[in-house]
Image (tube, rainbow, N blue to C red; front, side, top):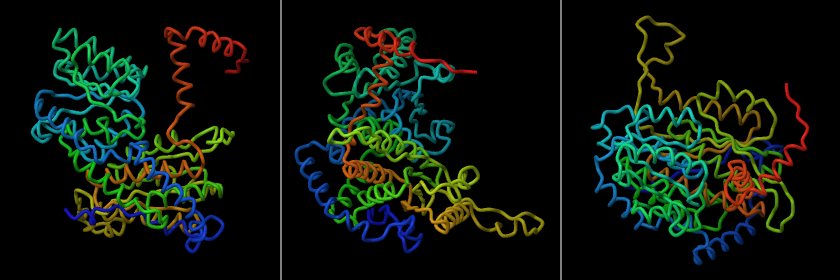
Length: 470
């Protein structure tokens, strides 16, 4: 495989002032002015990697993880009709993005032989009671593998869902229920780690120091990918290729740093949102994954000096061509407060020709003999043209194809971009205090031991508020 032919390119022509004007565009000197800061950040990243303090960038080289998963998959091939992935946030968004990008769009409806006898894949990434009950209507727990994914080992949403399916498994299988469970969690601590040891349940470890939103290239994403027949080796190979490509301190040659710098500079010009707009259904859930990565990493109240800054670009997802008919009017003629990031696929897996009608008609004749591939490409170019004419800054990540290798690339490029952008904003991109506050409040509302005092404080706060409703 010629890896260079599978290289993702970042086209940033349409953020430059020569193409969209000085008011909303960037001049080359704007980017060059960040070069010294970029060099310092790059050197710091290198130092942290050497000390294993930036572990997400070392994931492509942890081949033993892939070997461990391969061993389990080979030993259990054909055993399960269904796979249920129980996780939320970073424990689910990455795995869902992988499945959506790399499998047949109606994978679960294919007969077993067309799935190579891999299980149907279901992802419970929310605690909606109707959805949980609905899944129980369509799967047999006795023919299902349940994967419980939580870094802390005690995420309330994940553990509560696990408890529901655990009771069904025990009722159906008695003592054999353990063979239908896999835990993906911290290597040494937490409820799931202890339960795995006590009950001899198969488990895989999330690399220490890798937060949920950066965990798609750990067993969190690799296990369901490989269980469904995808290549963990190629995902990691693509990510490793991206690490190498982004190994330069030259801002204008580093796609991760460049994407981050564009976001940072345009944020300072009032572009406080970035819209990720894939022109591929396969990549729509990648935009979903990016939303969490960007929002949770960069939305912060305080900076590294503990000064209150309330900073953070807002990530938005849209889908081409669908959202040309729902959002693009706003994007082209609304406020000048957004950057657009297209995801463009140059070669789709399938070619779908458009046949002619029997009777000629000018309404349809221009489409006949073309293909849906050509049409979606034309739609993207037309939207890009309209945005550029209206001085809306936009970039395009160009995928030669959608494959394990290119998906691993984009994951790593965007993760490095996130870490780099956090440094430009002078905030910590790896913590999430706002999320933690909500978790603690949930424990209090649910009556968890040790949170009685917090619940009393919350109740007093709520009782003191005036209520307005209709």
